[in-house]
Image (cartoon, rainbow, N blue to C red; front, side, top):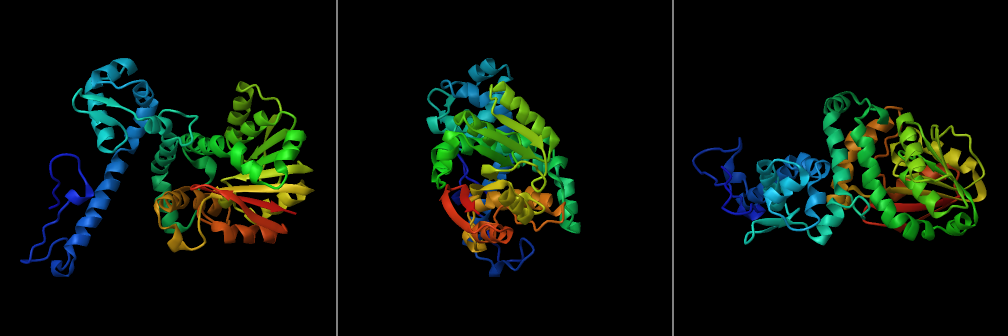
Length: 378
């Protein structure tokens, strides 16, 4: 049986003792490499720890534990008092978080704290990475588990709007962090002349806008320009309108419309943020955008980062995106008999979509570890 030594579990602490007296694990043990087996078990236990901690990440955010701990180091009783929670549960939660490297533990004072980097990712919704938002997406996949099993067996799909609402809020939060960090400072400036048009007073459309995080961010930055967000999911459009109203933004509008059927035209800029690969008709959506652009307009695709070869995506980022893709992105496209590009479509497939739609210029404008930013032009 696997054993772990005292103290914090590490992959190297897992050992499976092989017996020469008979088979174990249902296989001929003499043919199994013990070192590789222990290595795999260590890796799997790390994943198991992350999986069982997923709901505790949500608890940490929703109960205010990360936010409370970001203020100063605290003992469990202090954090419980600050957050109106039960000390016994908080002590166990803190031990879990410390074991996973998500909080710091000082045995001398029996206190816990967040480093600046941890606080930025766990307790600051305006930071460059919003990890609790990502775990709301994970939560949604468990709500959809029965449908996912059915999809795997039948090849059917699942519409975006059929998911639990936590998916919509989690997607907004996770991607909004990237937009806050990159959209105005890196992505738009990387386009050939689009920034100047927006500063002067242009017209832009945000297709598949969801809750409108990207739309309102651009509208606030460029008050002389007008922005319209389109999405086929009515509840998301209602949220987007409320978000813009709360922010006091009067140059952003939102409309329920499919990516191939909105009526706006003569746009200087049309954007697709992390959504083209989900669509039932990505070529049709790109073709409609081409027709709605001015002759010198810009189409910006922000897509999950992916290389063109599968073997080049077998890494932690690719693992996250393939996981989301198989449970969310591919089903959304298949629900409308689409090509199911998936979240790891890659630049070559995106180029093929845009060129089939009629765009004549296509280039990778910039990138991040999580995003490809593509500029396509008529």
